Length: 168
Ligand SMILES: CC(C)(COP(=O)(O)OP(=O)(O)OC[C@H]1O[C@@H](n2cnc3c(N)ncnc32)[C@H](O)[C@@H]1OP(=O)(O)O)[C@@H](O)C(=O)NCCC(=O)NCCS
Figure 1 (cartoon, helix red, strand yellow):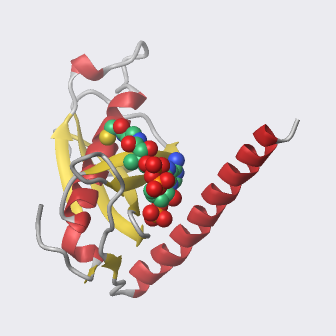
Figure 2: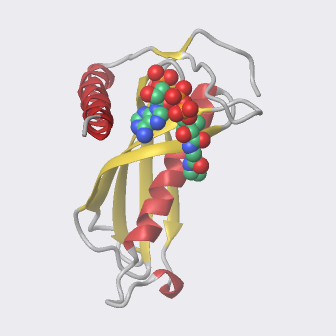
């Protein structure tokens, strides 16, 4: 695990991953299975969470995974991942997924987007504190504002469901 720091910027942990899809990843329609796309996004988000928090982090939740267009065999899939928000131990990571035929340098399609919540954990698997997020650009500040709205909705939804289970 790396040293404890007070704050890190989004650019410190931002990454881009690329891979080429294969026939082994297809669904019954012959396109790339949604779960394969999700796995790429989760992996990219996990790297960002690990970098920002300076140690292990696990996927706690995923919301707003949007599959916008099919991914085809032979597409180069690029995942762009960046931290949008950091709390005490949790972080929201946004992922944008693009695809492009391996043999054509032209058409790039935005095929999906997702927001993951990762929680940094210690050696015992308990939540541990993460550095604050120091937004650098107007884009970072917009993402931070929007992530706070999603966080508030997630918490409110969870509390409402839990309250409903307690009342007969
Ligand atoms: C994620 C995990 C460590 C959270 O443990 P926990 O006991 O609920 O921890 P806490 O209640 O202290 O919450 C820790 C943080 O996670 C957040 N959190 C926990 N569950 C969440 C959820 N479902 N959605 C959003 N945030 C969540 C809390 O809001 C809190 O955020 P904060 O510290 O920034 O304020 C635990 O649920 C876990 O280990 N889950 C399994 C993870 C896993 O196996 N993932 C798949 C493979 S990587």
